Image 1: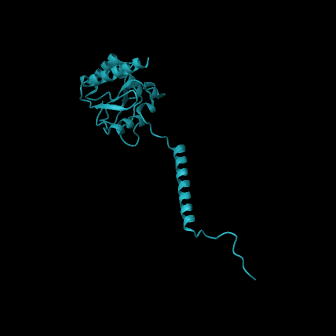
Image 2: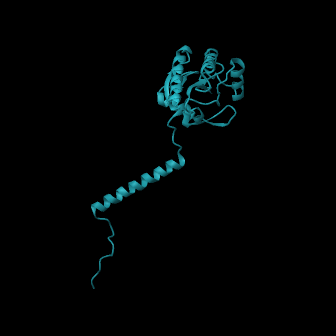
Image 3: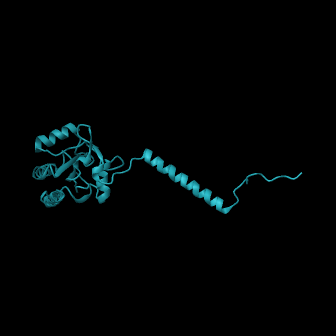
Length: 210
């Protein structure tokens, strides 16, 4: 009795079929990885103003509220050799240029010489009581290591300049990109001209849009 061949081939002997199966498997794996990334991994912000941070009272604040303005982002500390000169200088800038087109954005950090061991409430009271600070002071953060605040990490990654001490400064433009940085020893006079220039450009753009 004649034996009939099976209705379907038991193995894919065709080279084209093998290539297709490999390609199809790769597509499925790539799609699965993409879906997992969307579900479990929050994408990093494209600019500084795309991040959320925590204020000194523990409330979430979207940095998008500062979009369209110039921002001087600073890691501050209460017990540093640069504290007095920097807090006074930063408040001078805030008083001269803020808050409609410019803001100092202060982020306390205790990773440099343990010079900011205080609570958020104490930090806020110290800055406002001693220096009359009117600019925003946010929640105490970490800047170095795996627990670094993502918003501040963006500043570091985009400039390749990581703070080595307290009062490192990053000038952020209205679109959320860093244009310039300064060290804690740099006097406020070195910053004022760049801030003023950016504000003039902001005002000019607003007039042109009218």
